[in-house]
Length: 74
Image (tube, rainbow, N blue to C red; front, side, top):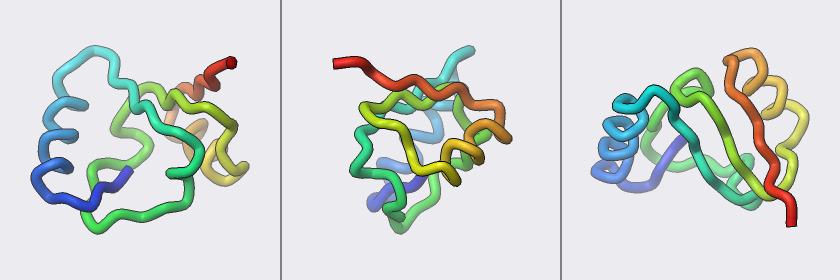
């Protein structure tokens, strides 16, 4: 998980570390894109919610990290 702004990345890290459950919500257009600042790895959140399935390598990495994958239905 990355961002383009240092302050936003720091804020995201803080938010993800506070709760018992941490959910990252993103649309499929963000898969494979890389920002300048690392927020966390796939083990840094408990669930990824998105609109379409990610590429197989991302789905496998999420599974290895123990993160749940949720695909929103239309």
